[in-house]
Length: 121
Image (tube, rainbow, N blue to C red):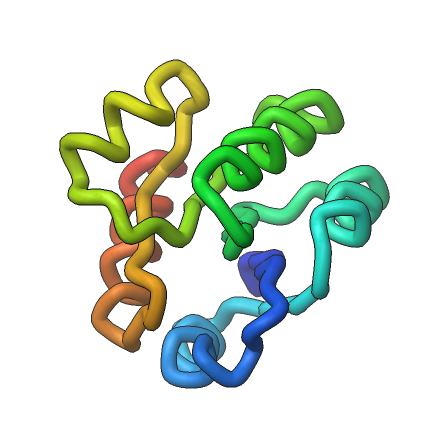
């Protein structure tokens, strides 16, 4: 069974290598353009992971909270330029699996999949 991954971004081309790696690992990746479409998808069928590429850190935080209101059991990852320790402090309490760089690579996809696998083991 393929893992369902939902990517919310207005920059799908930037995620090409990242998505290709997820798909090579057997994931089914769906891309949506905005937070409302993302929430509708989560309502229909909860994915294993939602990755959010919001326009700001505050928007990312609000988007994560919006997803939690729909289904608090869905794992999330957020694109962020913040250093890891600052990201952790700012987003503390939201249960975000990982932060991703603004241009995620295949290595980032492998890291996220390892984290997700560890959680689901």
